[in-house]
Length: 379
Ligand SMILES: Cc1ncc(COP(=O)(O)O)c(C=O)c1O
Image (cartoon, rainbow, N blue to C red):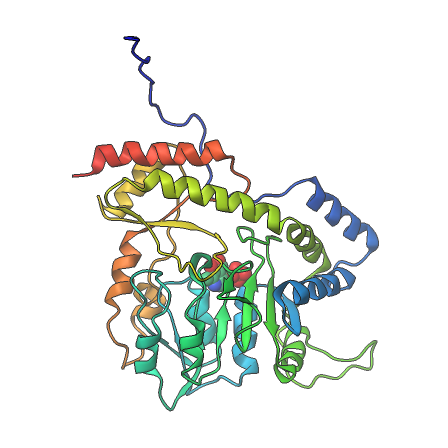
């Protein structure tokens, strides 16, 4: 008794902690080598296997592998017949690809404001915007939290769900990928099933699956006697990438466990920090834990991000509101309402380091650094 604990020197982390490094092991490297040895570089048996495994995993009748989630979203809108003169409603708090693909079809994006808790598109705001020209709604399952799919479906407009963050998510008791007219997933380098690049579309509708098959491959038939029924987009997936995705799919449960543990460390670590609020989750759903995002209000978010960088902690921002970006500022729909909740969220959100490649101690380092920055910058 009476002994005092030695003062712990609290210093910054020695090496830089990357924000979201890929979790790739020898198994993926071996799978790629095997595919290369097989002679199948483009779409072939590994892609077919990935589609079959994903049909089962997503509980969907059809799964089509494509070159990216951007292509998946674009082809989905084209398959629904979206084109010039049409309007498509989406969220402003997303990666710009979600809105870009609407522009690519010739249609006009209309942004609906978001919920202040989950930051997902607000069905009440969508309802106010649905009109004669509305041909589709594109909700995003932000960070892995499913959007309000029942409320959106009740509006009676086809849904193309952007599930780039939601490979593992469940909405109530149903698997994401089995619910909307079309659901689009990403296999991009940072995603929960990461192949570097790639995308998947799931649907239970035979007509849409057939249309999408024509749109992605460019041609039907074999050998030199080909025909095309639509001028397609050449958006198929290569077997090299499919072979990586298959190994990642094998690991999805193991990685989910690590993600859950890291999210719990963050939840506990920031619980007592005023002005650091994790984005809300709906306990009725299964969250894919794609990102761990907090809203920072104790100081300017950008200043906090810079201070964390000086602490050797990499962070990111998901997302800057799309309607504020140069490509959109000047071309907003004339009836576009203001989007105050998205604008505030866009200035507050900060994504903390999050990857199954990180150790628990890496996550604790990020928490410790955030605490130091908080102590320094909180007013
Ligand atoms: C919400 C969202 N939608 C779409 C995409 C586009 O995915 P991809 O890079 O596979 O085209 C991303 C990519 O990061 C995303 O975060």
